[in-house]
Image 1 (tube, rainbow, N blue to C red):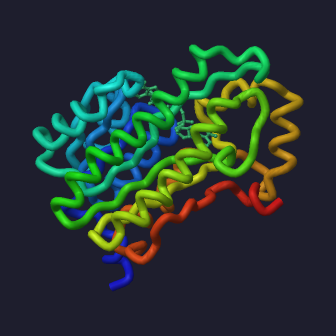
Image 2 (tube, rainbow, N blue to C red; image 1 turned 90 degrees about the vertical axis):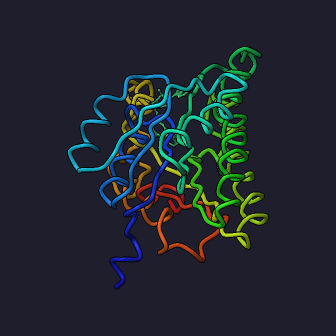
Length: 252
Ligand code: NAD
C-alpha cells in the first residue's frame, strides 16, 4: 500500500539537462519508479537513454538550448507531441560561472540568469498551463545550498538559486489548490562536472569535505529517492518546500 504511493507507472517526466550529473541520476531514478522520461538539453543523452531503456521505460530525447529565449515554449510543444503529456517537470539544467564579484561580466551574469532562472520560470509557466488543464502535476526545481548562502565568486549563480527558491514558493501558493505541487530540491556538494573546479582545488575540497557532517560529497544517485518522493503521491501535501539533500551541510 505504502509502496504504491511512490509508484510513477503511467507517468511522463520531463527532465532538463538529463545528459549527465544530477539530471541523469534523477531521470534514471524516476524511470526506476516507473515513469517514462523526456530528456531535454544540449548534450548527448545516449548514456541516459541506455540506462532508462534497460529498465523497460521509454526515453524521448529533445534538443533544447535553454539559454535561448523561446526554447522553453518550443520544448513543451514538442514534448507533448512526442509523449502525449507531461506529469512531472524537473527543472535541472543549470550552469555556473566563477569570477571575483568586482570583475563579474554582464555576459556571464546574463548567461547564468538565462539558463538558471529565466528558462526555469518559462518552463514552469508552459508546463504549468498544461498541468493545470489536466488538474494535476508535480514540478520540482533544482535549487542549491546557494539558495540560502552567499558562496564565493559566483554572484549570478547565487542570485539565480535564491530566485529559484522564491519562485518555487510563489508558484506553489497559486497552483496547489488546482492540483499542481511545486517544490524544490537543494543539493549539497555533489560530485559532477559542475563542481569539478572546486574538487580540483585541494584546499577548497578539503575545507568543504570537512564541513559536511556525512564526511563525503554527494553523488547523483543520492537524489533518486528525494525526486521520486516529490514526483509521487507520497508528497501530495508537501508544497512550496525546498528539500536539502546535503549530507547535513545546512545544519552544520
Ligand atoms: P552538470 O554540469 O553536470 O550538468 C548540467 C546539465 O545541464 C547538462 O546536462 C548540460 O548539458 C545541461 N545544460 C547546460 N546548459 C544548458 C542549456 N543552455 N540548455 C539546456 N541544457 C543545458 O551539472 P550538475 O552538477 O549535474 O547540476 C545540475 C543542477 O543541479 C544545476 O541546476 C546545478 O546548479 C544544480 N546543483 C548542482 C550541485 C552540485 O554540487 N553538483 C549542487 C547544487 C545544485
